[in-house]
Length: 297
Picture 1 (cartoon, one colour):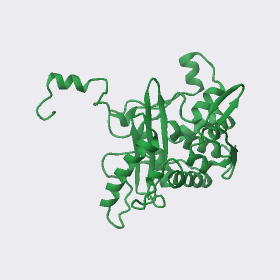
Picture 2 (cartoon, rainbow, N blue to C red):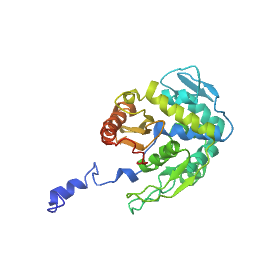
Picture 3 (cartoon, helix red, strand yellow):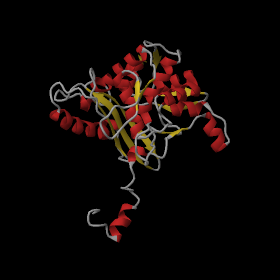
Picture 4 (cartoon, helix red, strand yellow):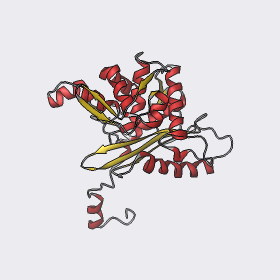
């Protein structure tokens, strides 16, 4: 189309409601349950929870006369299992205990709410971290526990770009370095974010369990190297839900980070985004050369 020059009708279609010219990698979307990594980091790094802490889960978590649903009751579980089954009631409680300051501090530490620094002018927005100061400025209202509860599971006024999410999962994969992404192979800038060894152990164990016994078991395929990651299903009313998966492989010595995003797909992260990742990883690792350990994303 562009080689010959688009017709007026083609150009109009490119500006249509589905916005095919919009670069989604730089657009902010609700991260949904993928944000539970940030809440995990806030819980452990703040000292409010330990590596082996457990929290009771339930089908419905009630707080100050209002109840918030979950998709299952899993008993008293720790962070790795909470990531694997994506327990909302677990993270409601973690969010309330650490509070919004620690929650958004962890998000900023992982590069959320900031430009990634990629060498493209299209990156014109840092996403959104709708914290206490933002709510007071935009709505003239004070923060409430409801805001903390929804933000803890990535459903509050939080918008994350797929590229920002890729940086987060890369930081877990590489041992705690926040990397500046580039489009060409060259030495890249990176910043040490200093996560506790216990925090990294919990994240890595939980992300692996998501695949082996959690919401992304479609990726637990012997034809693939061990995969680690997290699913998410983001609400976008009145439109259909978004589907997310962020992760890396091989889990024990990562060389590849992938974020898959299905905008308004109407499906779940495990049923829409994870199969995308499976297709990509199948192709990628089929063509990988033995001993090729270059970090790619």
